[in-house]
Image (cartoon, helix red, strand yellow):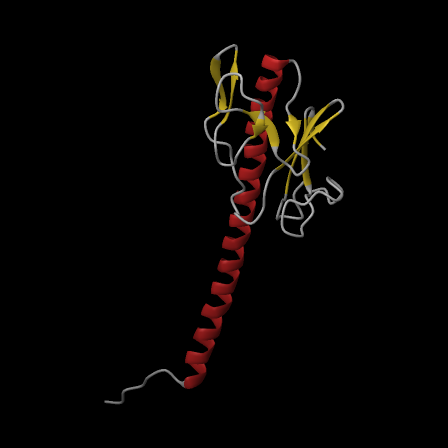
Length: 165
């Protein structure tokens, strides 16, 4: 009775095939994670936009920005001055002595190293973020020239008061 095992060539071929399949699977998985984070960013900015619209309904104007991406639309007590809303804190303000909560928790970027950026314009507002997927239909390298949504990364997605730009 002759016992025959696998040859070195057969083992190498099997390992090579498994390596290729793993690489393809890992690439697809990472791409899916990237698209998921981008989807979350778009959803977060849409949620923030709705909260800013509610603020404008109560005050007749959109909240001011602090010049570095923050929303000046929160206060801790009745009669207090509006200050920067803290992420991921509450977006709330006192209106006629009663607390109005626009968002119980302001969203933060799912990556953690990026941030959302708010800017009040003469005719409305813009919300900015980074999209990781450069093939996304809403990716716009010119969305916020000079506006940083990362340490050194310019924002490339803008949601305006009237929609995507």
